[in-house]
Image (tube, rainbow, N blue to C red; front, side, top):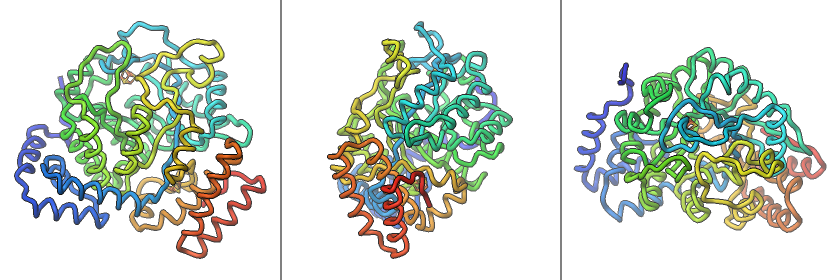
Amino acid sequence: MQSKTVPFINKPQMQAWLDEARLADHSKIDEILEKAANFEGLTHKEVAVLLTMDSSDHEDKLFEVARKIKEHIYGQRIVMFAPLYISDYCVNNCSYCGYQHDHQFNRKILTQDEIRLETEAIIDIGHKRIALEAGEDDDKASLDYIIESIKTIYDTKSGNGEIRRVNVNIAATTVDNYKRLKEAGIGTYILFQESYDPDVYAEYHKSGPKSDYYWHSMAFDRAQQAGIDDVGGGALFGLGDPLFEVLGLMLHQEYLEENYGVGFHTISVPRIRPAKGSSNKYPHAPDDELFRRLVAIIRLAVPYTGIIISTRESAAMRKELIDCGITQLSADSAVGVGGYRVNKMKRQAAEVQFSRCDERSTSQVIDWMLDEELIPSYCTACYRKCRTGDRFMHLAKSGQIKNVCQPNALATLAEYLLDYGDEELQAKGFELINREIDSIERDDIRSIARKTQDDIKQGKRDIFL
Ligand code: SF4
Ligand code: SF4
């Protein structure tokens, strides 16, 4: 039973907005697409119109505007990250998840030594940014354990590499606990809403603390009150009506902006995948065509918010989604506890939270990205320069962010090529880097980018603006 009302979600009102939006005429749709093409973002009512429009002419224009926004703000850069699962103990029973409490399997929580091993394995495939993932279990994986794990990850080095940003995806918690996470130096606090529809949410979350829709939905308020100003939202596409979920995301975004001055730093768009221990059928799972459209609409609505996809999507689909506005992706992810090294050493298969679709190694993904003229970026500069929350958004909206993103991205790509690439990959990568540096408009930024490349080739690391 829902105890309190979530201020930004009113289901009958949202359904009425979607119904009303279906009546929008062509000129209204054109006007909305024009506004988005000027990088102004969209209101939730404008998003409702794009979600419900029914015209292939407008669809072409939608994808064109999404591509324009992506190219103008993010260029060819794609931020890379890897998830690190440290515990699959969970007291919740989310019926779509392989870690749900009632699913019987040999659960695992990593020791600090094992976390060190896993971190080394992630560093050794070139990553600098991770998303720490753990099921909810205050006894087995307490906040003390999570904090100690973050410290272990930051302290681990391997070769020239280290993890420079730990984003954290753990259960909704208290203001005091968020303060402790902030003190531990986390990057973004990520929490997926799963479904914004309270009835759908109740259907899939029948027990455990996460079954409290209000507690879960208001988690970012508590995080903001604790001083965490980089928060990452998301919905699990396939549980409820996907149009309703996108509208929910937009209302949540507007609510955070109004109340805390900054909305989502990132939005994740996981699409439902089969998971062991779950026999659910998902009649609302969006097909590829609808999914591409939803991603493009989110890109138009929040031009300065990163959009993330994981290895849940196939290689071919990932390429198409990048064209629609995706800016961050994971590569070579182990989606089970100990999946990078610990289980391999013990020759056990990790139990996974969901099944992957893109099985390529990191170097294969990087090779593919270079062929597509995309720039894999391992940059973590903003968080380390305290460019978070509204400071980050101000820089992003002023258009100045690309003057730091581009040299930083190229610097981290050079590090990757020299430390983890073979000769062939290096040749391909440096050709792209040189081309990209030549195309930097500002003379001062171009010189900085060249100097940084020289320094990295001389053996310096971790240079950023
Ligand atoms: Fe636990 Fe998260 Fe899985 Fe739910 S989705 S069962 S909270 S690990
Ligand atoms: Fe991201 Fe900031 Fe680096 Fe740009 S400079 S890629 S916004 S961390």
